[in-house]
Every structure is written in C-alpha cells, then in structure tokens.
Length: 92
Image 1 (cartoon, helix red, strand yellow):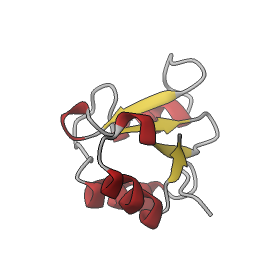
Image 2 (cartoon, rainbow, N blue to C red):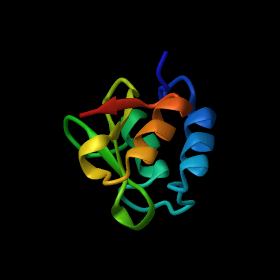
Image 3 (cartoon, rainbow, N blue to C red):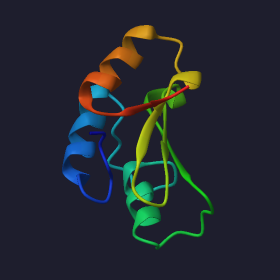
C-alpha cells in the first residue's frame, strides 16, 4: 500500500524528511501546499507538485491524496529505490 496524503499525512511528512525533501515552508510546491491542495484549499487543478531538495526530486500529488515520487525528475537511482522503500508510489 502506498502513502496517501489524506490518510497518512504524518507518515508522508516523515518520509519526505527521510528523503531530505521536507521543507517547513508554507509556500508553493511544499508539503504544506500539498496539504492545502488535498484539503480543497488550493486553486491548483488536476494535481500538485512538491519540489524536493534543490528542486531535483519531485513528488506528484493527486486530488485523492495519492503521492508518487517522480523517477523522471531524479537522476539518482538510489533515490528511486529509497522512495519506494519508504512507501512512495513511483511515477515513471
């Protein structure tokens, strides 16, 4: 079972920290922004992106809270492996 931002919010936050991609910022493209999106408090349509450390890693969030690590935006195979082990779905 993959992580879900609606049902596993704290686990998603902990996994982002473990990946080195959590930002406490309330701004756009952050964990807080993704939470607003899944709570229906954002103007984003169709999906939301969380930008990881230095904008290299990206996570795709759907309106149902599904969150996937974007393999297309990571040049490090070990990051994909780690994301999968933490419970992220992998988007190729």
